[in-house]
Amino acid sequence: MIFWSRYVHSFEKTANKFFKSVRSNTHQVKVHQQLAALMQQDVIIVNLWMEKRFKN
Image 1 (cartoon, rainbow, N blue to C red):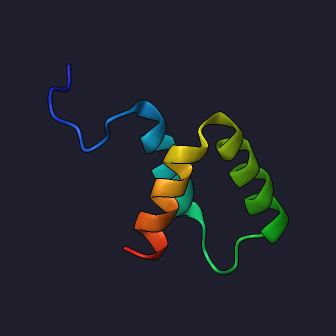
Image 2 (image 1 turned 90 degrees about the vertical axis):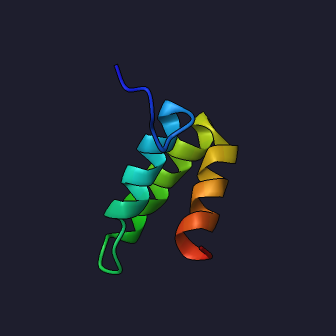
């Protein structure tokens, strides 16, 4: 059992994993499809992780 985690919700780990996998040479259509699927699951968490990843 993990008592301390940097994630509040398990979906945050999924969003973080996605954003870490995106590179400048990643196929645009693939990124768009995966991002759309993530946003349909929880748009608020995806938005927060986008701000963290790209605005810091």
